[in-house]
Length: 608
Image (spheres, rainbow, N blue to C red):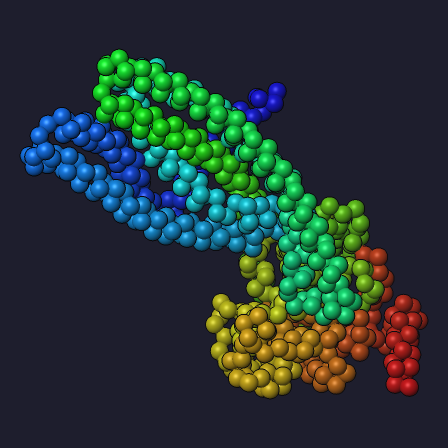
């Protein structure tokens, strides 16, 4: 059964070769043609050298038995000159091949990176909820990225060595038809070793993907700024270094054990091949002693058999590497074959813009993939066009999940989300998302200029500086930006030597990004959470003017922010438990009123 499985595995890997060659051709077809021509020429040159060796040896023997004249010496010198020229040509073609291979490899790797990036940015967010996805992504980005170029190099070496070996086999066949067979039999043990350990290595690498990712995580924790402060304050540096070293030690130990076992197996296979070669050489020496062949023939046989055996080993190594690389390429193609579930409908209808009726969640239920916890349960929400609503509630109540469903990062398990009565699943993803401007709870800080950080929300419209500055002023980001060395042209973040902002200032820049987008729906998740009291008061004073003409949803824990809304909805356990204006909710004495009283009391204690 095990042998059958391995046979099927080998068959599957070889079937990947056409797909790989197609990928290589798309990435670097002209360089691939040059590479193919070079490998054919390089494959035939060694045969010429072998034939010249026999002619040279026989010429030298004849020279030893004749007069030492220039006429007798000239053929030998001519043969030496030809051999030197062939060696020079081999070196020249080798250098050209290295250049061609480098260009080819770079183009292939860049093409593959583009495919992986395109796939990673097109898949659903649901994939990021699965550790299996991260394993697949790691194998595609780290283990498989360089494999197509390596596979092509292996195939090229295989073809080149096959050409040379075929010519060597013709030479050996002239001395005895059983000699090429002897050459093949001597290398079969090496073939078994290569196939077995290529499969074992891939299986080990696949089983240890999570450990490799864990080592990368510890390395990331120790080297990036994100965790630098806490690592120093809590003295966690040694702890994470220990975890990294422990993980790497386990991987290193297992790899060394696998390599040690392979080395002993290869040694045994080499001894068998050496024994086979010795038998053939003894037979040829006996024939020379019998006077059946010349010393030149013996020299050519030895060189042909020795090179043939080396070529067979190289050939098997090439085949083993092809098999090994194709195993990892299977991981790459499996990643590229992943398909999103949230997709455009076959015949999308236009996105309602601007909204005339509003946004509605109808009996929506949802739970995240690979989770048993229901985040939203029979959730209903109606937001009239042009209305500002606020969603308040405890952490984990499902407020931020509503944003992900509204953007169709996920689809609800049950129910419908509609814009002007049109289900979101009936409109195109791009069209829907262009109508939504969002400030996420954890916005991205881009290591680019201040102007670019704001413009990123609407690159398609090529916003000018007037729009960028207006959005910055609306978000209160114009003040922090004006204090930067080059204003809006200042590079932000420390990765590339830029200027750093405080957490609250970064949030204002992200808020400006949301305002810049010409969208009919504005969603702000904790828009003032990182602002100080003065900045929050300034922003709240202008918010309703800024949101004029848009349908806005505020998700917040700060009731001073929620008070700006026309309607406040209190979310608990995945559904709305209270709704109304601030005054109405306070009068009802429910959850909102109790939380407001507690927040005010906490503020008074803080002032004391």
